[in-house]
Structures are given as structure tokens and as C-alpha cells.
Amino acid sequence: MRYIWTRLWTILISKTFLIMLLIVNLLGSIYGYIWYGDQLAEAKLIFLIFIPDSPTATLFFSIAIIGWLLKKHWRLFEALALVTLVKYGVWAVVMNLMVLNELGSLGFAGWMLVVSHGLMAVQGLLYMPMYDFKSVHIIITAIWTLHDVVIDYVFNQMPWYHMLNQYMTGIGYFTFWLSIVCLIIAIIAMKKRFSVAPNFV
Image (cartoon, rainbow, N blue to C red; front, side, top):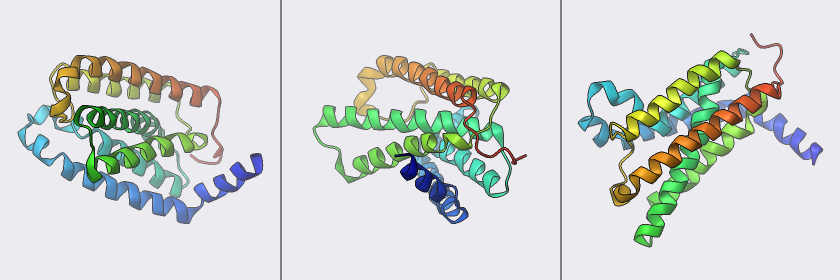
């Protein structure tokens, strides 16, 4: 098993694979911002940065990848990437499965969202050995993440899932604790000193 992980890790941190992953995440961010277009068009300016959750998560990860390609740790973006990729990846999978339960079907676009967001969470966790963030970066990430929960569920700026409106109170509660779990994962990543890139700046 250790041999398999070692071989897999060699592929994951290769320059070619990281460039491919960067392209995929950037394209995902672009698509995601377009997908949020109607909601962004109706939102107040002060809320805009907090509405497109998933594309911003993949953008954070893209910035972290660029840092790795440059042999640098952009630690705040690493922390933001881990927490938001896992949080919004899991959140979107759960929401779409709730839609499936509510409507009885999901359609191609819905299943595409399930797969793509599931992979978001997986990639965030797979690269845990690369993260080198510190406590201050987790604190800033916690403020961002929990503030986003407030924006979504106090100011009603959550992603549009109109068929789930009746469940919004419960979804908000779930999202808060999902945020806490993701922050705990970040703390574990930091405490375990997973970083395998000690020569990075």
C-alpha cells in the first residue's frame, strides 16, 4: 500500500500533472462563475465576492498550485483551498442528493455537479501533504469561512436551490458544522506537519 501511495504521490506532484490540474481548476472556476451569473446579476455589490463558493474554492487551489510550480508556499491560499474545497465539495454533493430525493431525478447536469464537486473535495484532501500553512492562516480562513455562512444564511445569499427552500434552516445548521469540521481538518493537517516541501519559501 505504501508503494502504491508513493507512486501515486510522484505523479500528483509532477510538474506536468500540476499544470494539467491547474488548467482543469481554472476552467472549472470560469464555468462556475458563469453558472452563478444570474444570481450575481441580482445580488448587491457587497455580497458578490461571497456568492460563487465553489469557483472561488477552485480559484484558491489554482493559486496554491501556481505557488507550488514556482517552488513557493502561498500559505493563506493553501489553507483557504483545503477548507473551501472540502466544504463546498461535500456541500454540493449533499445538496444535489437532496434534490434527487425531492424531485426523484437529477439529470445530467446534476450528476455532473455531484461528480465534479466530489472530486473537488478529494483533490483538497489528496494534497494535504503539500500544505504548509500556519495558525494565522487557519484563523483568517476560519473568519472567511464562517463569515460566508452568515452571508449565505442570514442575508439569504446561498446558492439557488429553490426546491430546497423549505429546508434552508437545517441546511444552514449543517453548513455551519461542515465548516467547523473542515477547519478541524486544516488544524490536523498543520499539527501533523504533513508538509513534504521543506525547501519551499
